[in-house]
Image 1 (spheres, rainbow, N blue to C red):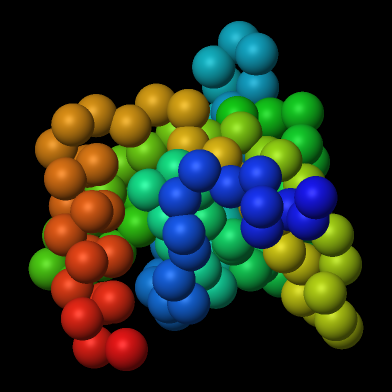
Image 2 (cartoon, one colour; image 1 turned 120 degrees about the horizontal axis):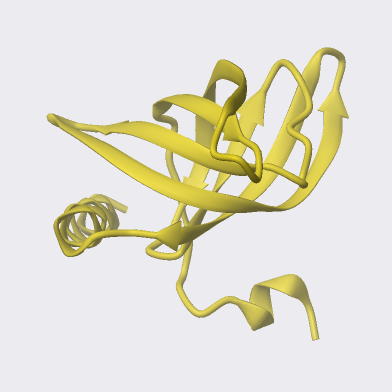
Length: 115
């Protein structure tokens, strides 16, 4: 079974700016940075950054989707080097409120309508 087969939701390729904070177990921000999404689904994103993200931290994300700003928390499923000064992290959403989930669903549906 491939990784793709294990996913609950289909991912769409999408480039969106993102701001993130790495949060430790005491809920303190350890690191902050900027990146971009490479793909998005209802349950997670593939995030590209210029520094690796340590999987031991929870990640607080601020994602700009069209005219909306979503604030979502996630856990790092994996983090790998993807080229010179580039890293990719698979982020699984762990705290998504209904309003943010509705925006994600609308964004994904609209994007699929343009494929």
